[in-house]
Length: 214
Image 1 (cartoon, rainbow, N blue to C red):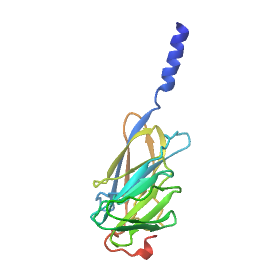
Image 2: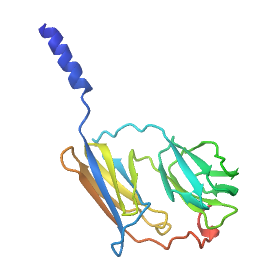
Image 3: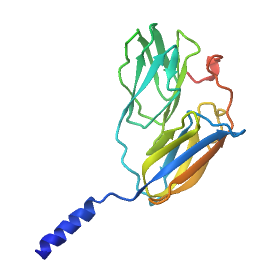
Image 4: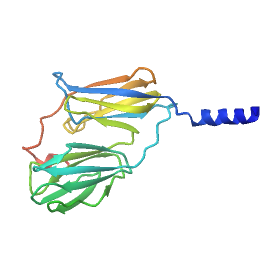
């Protein structure tokens, strides 16, 4: 009986989840205004075991001649599908270094699943409607979130430990060093990450394709 009890105890302890916590994120500009569509990712430091990344499929819609969302965060191994919910045709394309593709999509049509293999970022446009612009951001960091209209996001179930937080936004000046800060994640009190970013003007509606990395 004692042997059975000991075995059961070992099994229960072995099945218990590792300690995990929550990270609360806020991103604002240099005037303190909230920044939407900023991607904040967490890279584990040595000694911190990250959670496993499960490949996922993301969707970028086209509605009212606008890409939704403006920024899509992905991991290598994820896929993205472009969907046309408009009543007009769209010619979706990117000539970026990270990924090159083009799809002609009629109303109601979707592209094949496009696999992301390398980290980086890609600007995506429509060759018919110049004002349309979206970005794909691919990171190897296991934890990531994109801020909402209030400049906020949160990540649940982050494995406890030490991380380096990175922030990215498509309107950061090209070539700028991405802001980085350390963060400690525990299972008791949520960790907080706060970034101040200096952004260039929103390029949608007044685009210069020679400088957008298509």
